[in-house]
Image (cartoon, rainbow, N blue to C red):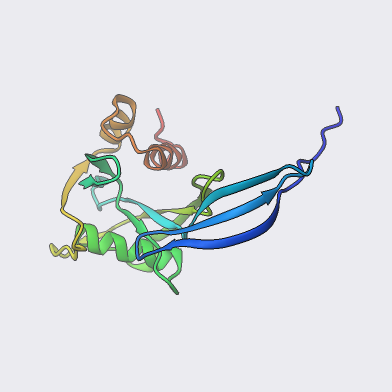
Length: 188
């Protein structure tokens, strides 16, 4: 079977149309390989984000419950957040875990589990999944103005059930949980 490699698109013009602390949006004018012109193709630019599958010494998973304005719902997720300018994905994972949950993870106890493309059609975002082991509680969250986070704990079996019953329903977090459970030999 002879499969041709898809040809990329040519960007003929590009401009940033929105740039805020929360979003950077680019508008491209595109020329397709067959010569057709596509106007106003929008791409969200991002440094990406880190997701943390954090395990206490008793193998409980730390979860966060918080309101998400885009979907206007309160959701249960793994700790996660955007990578700041000049920050590595691993430093982001350690910082977000501390800020959102009040738990500290030593760098030696942080394992990079994988990197994934988030939305290749309309975004440059990649996310970086980490497993944090032997985390320690400080009891102090360092929340942003837009965050109000309740911390929850779940066994590995509970977390698996939460993705199956829809308690955890954010795609990147569902995929991350299944990925880590498989890596730990606990997919069941």
